[in-house]
Length: 279
Image (cartoon, rainbow, N blue to C red; front, side):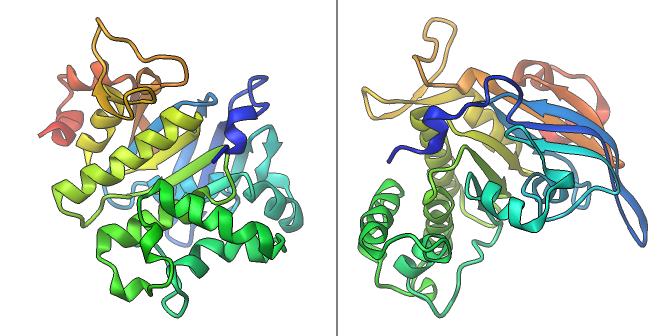
């Protein structure tokens, strides 16, 4: 599989950029003047309490919501001012992994993974090989004819990752990908995210309440030669295309960015609010 990320032309600017973004509903503003940027190939881990705006940030980046004020730019396009037709084209370059998988219960695993390709009228002769390739990446090629209800929660989450990468995206947006999963299954999901990042250079925004997921992405990388996950240390930096050292954290509080920095800054903080995420 060769995602578009391998040849993405985003080096002229950030892959994702928020400029003074506000988003409000009847109860008031949820996001209040949020500004940040994510360079190509970087992973930004979004932390914050429930309702702090993490998922809304992902939906804004995908063009599923429009800001009340401010601008959202993705892959050089002003998402906040694009028409729905233009957004459909852009979303072909964006993968979205929903918290609960969001699979179609009446479709087989293979049909779920192929859904976007059929919506885009890709030739049927191209669809099956790409579906098999995506399922093979998440080590579930044997489940193509099964229904989601026949799979475990972790397997369904892996299918959602296969569906997200079927279009070979430049960017993948993960909404709490390990929520509700046991530690071993969570580790499997994070290893897949790590592999997608380090093998194909995919830019990622990952919303989570599990700080350990972010630290795993920061402290480990997928070694393409050894074909397994290895720890990154000062004596062993990532090789070309491995971007464990390009993992950054952003913490929301009261609709604003409370912290933005690298793993070392977060892990050594004395701030009482940030310490709550470290316990």
